[in-house]
Image (tube, rainbow, N blue to C red; front, top):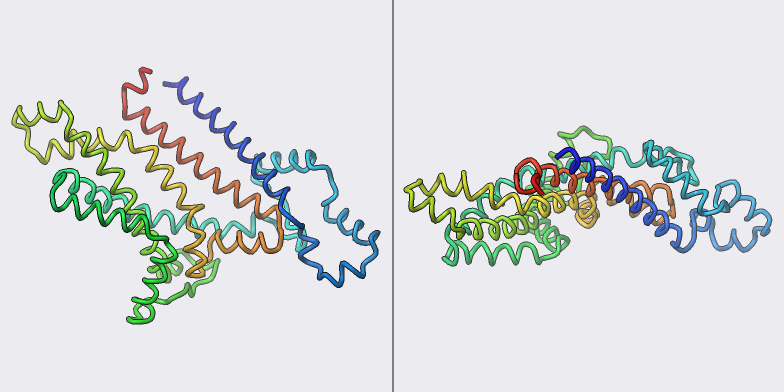
Length: 318
């Protein structure tokens, strides 16, 4: 098992290095740079070419790409993403609180979605091909298929306009305490929660259907084991293990996949900061946000692998 753990750690590290390289290349081919955005077209037209080149040298925009790639990888290894090109503000200070806020939103959704999806998936699998299963399957398809910006707009129309129970946009600031931010975010949480429950319930339902139809469950029933014990003690672990990777990747994707929801509700997370950085061509901020999102996905996948190793003896033997 130790060899398997070390192998997965090394593979995750290599994956992060490759992702960091890809992120750097992707930001390099973006049209324009921070200087082009900060100056107007008239200023660029009236500025002497020598002055423009000098400004690019001052910002480090004329250095070779390989040199900047090496600096980016070295900085990422120490969590030092440098400073912004124009304002010279530390990138870590810019993305620190937005990253906290996005992680907070994703964590709240996961804590609420997992038990609800688990209960719904078990119920649908237990009454397989009966009315509860049809209701859950249809609702899950609808909930997962509707885009989140549509769900968010509907919730705003219902609970912020028709019945003004919650604010339509987030009234908290980026650096506000966690409880203040959560109190202002019921609609963003509900928007993501609907799609999350729909997706997770479908995954868990499929695993439970397969587990409840297996031969060893039939033998347990013939042995007189109570049905509740069969479902919760024997079938549920067998259904969760194959779904762990999918569940972990979906949980990690929430951090990078809630950009639309953050923009709809003006939530002070990474989504707004990323859009602002792209608009200003702040390459260092874009690279830091993309790498942080990728690191969360890799870490979640690694955690799922470790959980499978711990729970499934067959994987350890292999």
